[in-house]
Image (cartoon, rainbow, N blue to C red; front, top):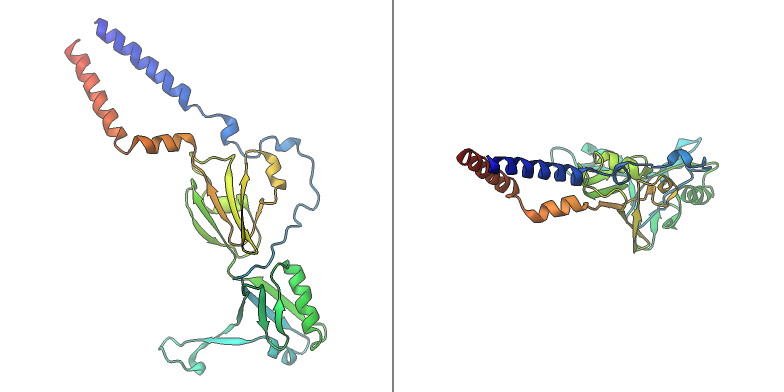
Length: 262
């Protein structure tokens, strides 16, 4: 009887201890804390990405007279489904321009253009001025076709995600990955960014509302976002996969002990 009472006390104590240590803090989990206290920000949507080496650019030129724009719109042909390399049977597509390591592309008629380091607006202005020598009031459309970001670590669906709009926030990217797991550190998210061949490593705290004004609120092409595991995840990995089996065995032994000494 005395053993049974002691066992009940120990079990109650361990249960209470478990709940004490398992209680999470609001500061560790909640996003955008104190956002109501932030003043309204002007020009919050002024961010523009910059063109980088290895970007694939689609450039389409049009004009009032479609014929004069034809030389500026190179076409390419994919192989036919019957594996014949017959252009007549191929599918016509728009030519893409790869930005080389010097930040340049070879553009028809105009020649070599250095677009690396320019924003999309600046690149459009440069293209319009160069093409404007040959065409009156040209209309130029430019987009990056291989814009992507990668998410790793404690997110529910890690992977590399293509971005169609050339504009994505850190929160939108995390949402694509189905948000952080409960084990992800929300106050120390790593954003790895490469500009002109130089990598930078930057930490973002999404529990603080002022991260919205951070240079890393908007992601650039090829950014890598890594969510670090918290202590609970690290400790659980150290204990090993057999923990549940061991706990179950101990529970069975304790139950048998209670029945024997009852």
